[in-house]
Image (cartoon, rainbow, N blue to C red; front, top):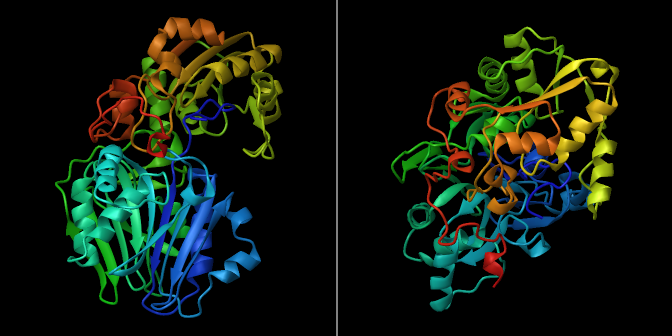
Length: 472
């Protein structure tokens, strides 16, 4: 399934985490905490590797962090003298949601055993993998992360840092990775910085890599800086080292600030919560409307709704209650069941009764859930529903690690704004402009390929390539 059929949102990405400790530490427990803080980035599988310089323990499986790592399993990867670890929470954007595709991936090489955790996608993975298969390479999984790991492993005459840099130059796309040997931790990011990766440090001197700062704070680390686009960083007994592998061409993913990142995160110097408030303020300036109350679609529309209310002067209120127990594990196999799950997840409050409502959400993918939410508000007594969206219309698929729908399933690729308005049943419908979004994020370069069709880090040979392409 290539989009969340209940929330009608682009599916999550993945979260990566890594630790290097100059002194022995309980890295299994710290990695568990870091992965738990990144759970919002992937709920299909979780795993970690831990090494003490000699032993190298791996544990992974399908499920949430708390489901995979019960007390027994966490103890199985605990090493009393652990110094290096990595962790991963997965949402599959390449390869099936099967246990053998769970990460970290590991392999034995002339450099010793290696473990890799990856967020993003390599757009030329299929071509490189095909070439390597013709040369006799073996692959145990069907995800593109193994292509990177295989490229690193085959450079037998290079040390680990040199081999990783060579692999970075071979693969294109949007990615952030953490790699470990028994004694070393490496992190690297694509030259466009599409996928995020940050560096932190604990008071005991341990270095931390993570997809978001929230994972640093969870293990008692402070944010040092972002890994720069095109940069490789590595950690050993001498501390932090940096190598610029490719020319920096920053176009980070705009959806990190629109939807994916936690509201308490700061990425590439831009505060997520504040940027979402600015999106709402910009939306109010671009698309004003006479109304009585501003209502967010929880939780992703919260920041933009605050901004819209602040700029417009229209009061903010909680017009939709979100049931915290309606999780992702509830099976909804039919459209009727999915519609019922929306009602299980969201229910209107009295704040909308007799009111003209401005409904704020971060995106519309197919429009099916948006239509149901509009209907819920009308049934609860809303006299008007004006839908405002804090992202531009999504008209193109993402090839860099966000599992949006194929283009034909994106409602904005085949319908005008007015046609979408009629489809969802709103009185009015407006999206933030692409320049307005850019200003709200901070005016920096950003990837807006899903809005514009302009892909800064390249595209696969076949557009709308299937996520199962490596399974042929």
